[in-house]
Image 1 (cartoon, rainbow, N blue to C red):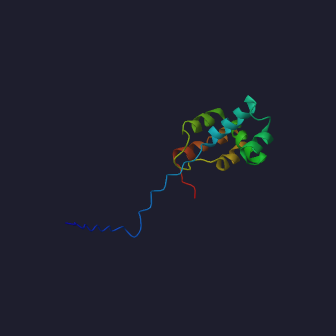
Image 2: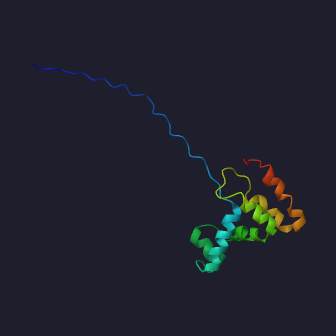
Length: 120
């Protein structure tokens, strides 16, 4: 006596796409401190050497390191945002114009932190 079974599988025509991971953004102050620490500790001889090692231009490294010359209270406030950031609250490029301003004029940055506007 022979028993025959028939099994039918019905597969969906398309598998559901996996959810995209949420993008994370580095806090520019953390990155600046990381670059400065690598130079100070001797992992890189100078900004040019560091740039070669991480694969960016020397100017880019310099732009990040210069952020540490912002007013100390602003640097501290930016650090308190944490790293990584879930939104592009603040970027190196957005902070760059404030380097040429006085510490009193730099206080405008607090408004950028308090009411973050997502960048496109």
